[in-house]
Image (cartoon, rainbow, N blue to C red; front, side):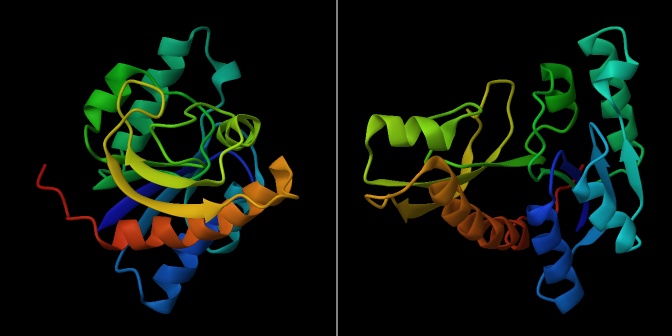
Length: 188
């Protein structure tokens, strides 16, 4: 299987994927790692000898122009799947349609509960005793695509947003790799 991984931050999910590939537990080729800005995830990929690219939204006059540039850059690699591994940008319906049922994202809550950018904070504010994470296909909504896998994480009495999110991230890294390993190679 051939993937492009998109990141926006530290790249810990990316590192889990790279480690699994290096260990031989994930039969996947990382064609490239892309980002919307310079970040640690891009540095991790460069250090591993993986091709990288950055498509900054500020370089374009409009969101649609940025989406088209990002779409064409990803498409230039002909990936089987696009993995949003901490990629903190919402892409438009045209980009999603181009890679329909081939963009995978993670979310730090048990969808459909607590979608959006603050899933951990929202779960804590609501007072749930169990939250978790979801690996799902991206559709044109926000965290509304078909669910591929989920894992539960208990909320402890003394949890802060940071401590809970860190425990979710540990599970997220494992579940993302496991989910990628179970994906069928698409026939495009």
